[in-house]
Length: 269
Image 1 (cartoon, one colour):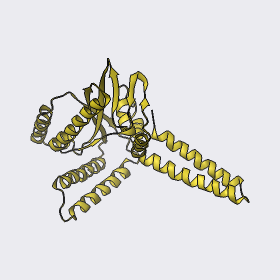
Image 2: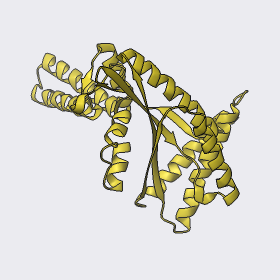
Image 3: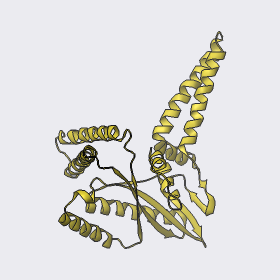
């Protein structure tokens, strides 16, 4: 199983080796140049893989046509965006979608929660296949939490301002950004009142069957795209197709979840 963090650690080790080479090879121009080049490549690679590994690793595996084999007979194709398993000659393909919720039920009125539940039921009733919704909740550690919330609030305000300044702003994006800003403001107000913050991680899983890998993957992709549009429009949330490390985390959470809030937040970094 390809983990971007291991590649980042390897690139960091290469940067350290290059730095040591520069120190040891003082006086030798060729050794110093090669060591400096290795240090530069390793440092850039470590930062890029650590921050954007979830994007780079799928591209690398797809270009190199690498198939990852995991325990239990599961495999990940080069696209790195689906989990496959062969059961009795039939292929099962599972895809995961991340869901970002910007509103809390505790901040809505009873009538608003009833309407929201109706929207959810209508969205699900239009789906003809089994869909799994997973939600993990935990109490956040307020240490340094307020600073992170204020930073995210400022970033959300900036996205909203940029969208408003466009000649033809997207109405759906405006509404979503406004709700995101309101969510961060509500969390800041709760902290001010001394209320402990609660975190939520939500994702959706869908599985399709096919007589071949390609057929199963195509069916799973179609179902995932349908779910993405249905859930985003009905519940006004942000839904993203997951791949790479993000998909693997959801797959691993099917059997065991992080036992502490700290481990869960670390996994999301």
